[in-house]
Image (cartoon, rainbow, N blue to C red; front, side, top):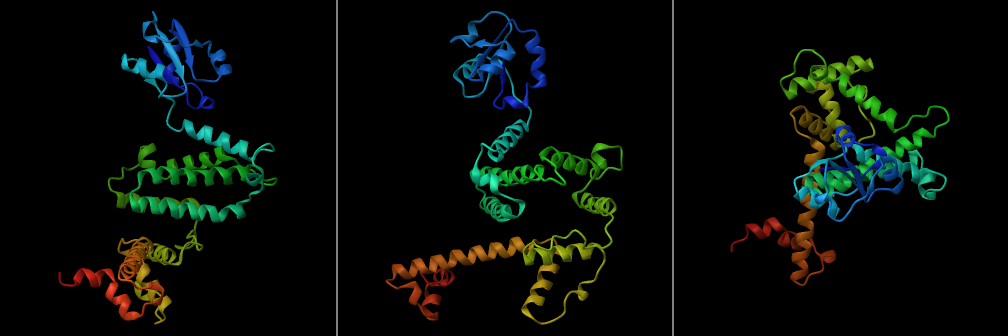
Length: 318
């Protein structure tokens, strides 16, 4: 008995299933589209598949299907579509949303109008990572993937320079293969992450023919992250830290701190965000304590804030 799961029919039949399909005595289907079942020559699955004689293949759309569960309990092999099959379905859904009979809001969007959502979804993903929330991580990764699919679909409609999600994926594959010659060719092996990072930058520099060590740094990123990235890039180029902006303004001091932190292996953006989140939590805790004491947080003076600040309370004698 062989179960072939097809949750995403457009992704095709798994190659591993072909030999079993060819030798099958009977092919059944459960929960899949009728036209697809006809194309596969599959009959509706009976109640007791385990009693069927000869080699049997069951095509099913859902791993939770009772017929599938029964066969799995009986020891049947299960063949799933390759990893990434769901991406085909996601691209298909995006095409439908953007089509003339799709969603009016989706149809009106442009690269420019979508920018805010890409930023928002990215920060929501960062929050999920920092909180260690697995369910949120899965959801937010999907929301970021939506932004990629959306932008690629909009790009496919460009009159002068169209490209689609397959072109995006092909370019990514070429980049990953080209920058990992030690994995995909017989080039010199890379044994440490630090060595790989250096090789990545060398290959990227040669590939893009950059004239400056700071070419390619996204100047639109948050300022602390930008300062850190510039510090890192110029550090690789050998620029000494004493050439960082030398003024005494708060902004120049902050630049030096962020750039120096990144050179030492610390992510200044992430660290500062963590401090900010702890501060926000302390503010909420102080306000809660003040309310419990019968005070209005909006009317508290400096002494009242200090008296109800979490650290002050934790340091007080018991």
